Length: 47
Picture: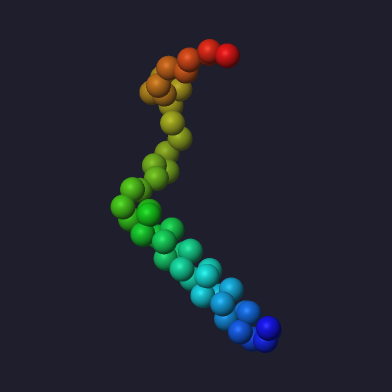
């Protein structure tokens, strides 16, 4: 396969992944502040 074609496909895939990541962040933003221990849900220690 031609190296230029392979590089072009790789760049295209990276651009699609970045676009999907930005769209996901726009739909559901991640909180940038750290979670406080008293606000975390209880953890079940079942094994």
